[in-house]
Image (cartoon, rainbow, N blue to C red; front, side):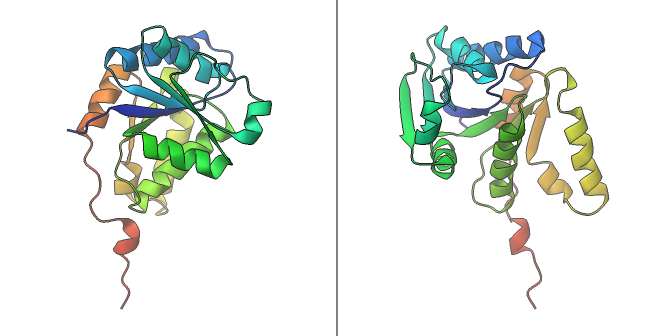
Length: 196
């Protein structure tokens, strides 16, 4: 079983227009706090990000915000964080979030959320880490994305074993259990290439 002492959550800095997503974000923060799992996230008090942090902090959870210097001028930073870490740029931010986390969960969001998800899953595919990566598919938000990934598998651009690096569920408790039970692929794709 994977020990999940800390989880990095990728999600939108906007709230979107679905109250169910907002409620689930708060509930995820609450669940992490109740299970004594530290939340690592992008440090904002706005959007879905802010609701996850509020859920954790309202239930006495540890919340670590990581933000690049240039975004401190644009985003509204949560003032009640357990710890705030400032990085020089976005690349350092992602490296720091990875370093601090035992696993990752993606909630609904936009371009930035997808970029974070796909970078961390690519790192896993390349064998750079073996941490579980969860996708909380609230209300079918990511159904179209999952259909695209399945199409990539059918058309030979994505191996099934790499598709399965993404742990998907629409229930927080089940997702956390699947992440704890996750067994990583032992040999990365690029090591299997025939070099003869």
